[in-house]
Amino acid sequence: MGSSVSEGGRSSSYPLLKGQKALVTGANSGIGRATAIGLGRMGADVVVNYVSGGEAAQDVVRQIEDLRVRSYAHEADVSQEDQVVEMVSRMVDELGTIDILVANAGLQRDAAAIDMTTSQWQKVLDVNLTGQFLCAREAAKEFLRRGVVPEVSKSAGKIICMSSVHQMIPWAGHVNYAASKGGVMMMMETLAQELAPHKIRVNAVAPGAIRTPINRSAWDSPESEAGLLRFIPYNRVGDPEDIATAVAALASDLFDYVVGATLYVDGGMTLFPGFATGG
Ligand code: BGC
Figure 1 (cartoon, helix red, strand yellow):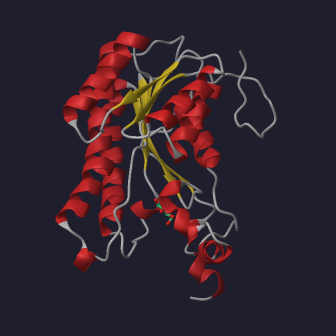
Figure 2: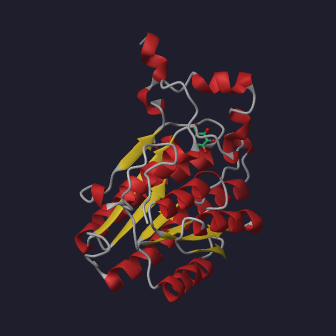
Figure 3: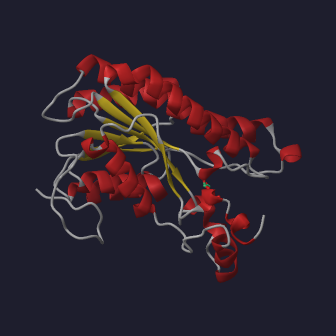
């Protein structure tokens, strides 16, 4: 079975992730959805995690099964330790192991700092940061137990943390979200340092403005899209597939020597575009 790197790209046929088992959290919509399908296209079996929106998750599963790899949906709140433990242990039971974790589930609860409630603050930190940690911890245990299987991959496992340009760009009105992603950066780098001697690769993808439900108001009218494009030198809003291909590449052995890196996939948003004409 062949797989192409991207749907629209040239159909070079090399199933980079053939035989690997991937878990994608928050995979029923947006970036997670595209990533789950993208990994399936590259030959991986994929567990589609979701916390609500079971119908949408089943739809993703069907699309992945059409690629002639295995898939199932698993409902779990990544911020709840027992649910994460159960999710990874079911995956080991059903698919045999886990090779790739994409810790993607994340949300926004925006408010000006002085109006932000403790529950808005806590919810975002719980899902975006603690949730990624719990999933990474459980995946790493299985990677360590199993070790390297050379026919499958050069490494014992790959963790891809979904970060954001806001791990480095401060974001007024979103202090909880920016703090969570800044935390993801240091969590990812520390895990990478700790786990690399065990042949586990931990990296992050940091998307810029991608056309998904999380930021719909930023692109769903011509005026708002024009406003957004002022921050994007490459002059287009990203598509979820832009992120999916980056994740698949990072997870593959083509990137075997990439450890503890953040791959910004942002059309240049982190290039301080305001300085293009001044400074
Ligand atoms: C946020 C989006 C935002 C983008 C660029 C992402 O991490 O989730 O809402 O449009 O960063 O600012």
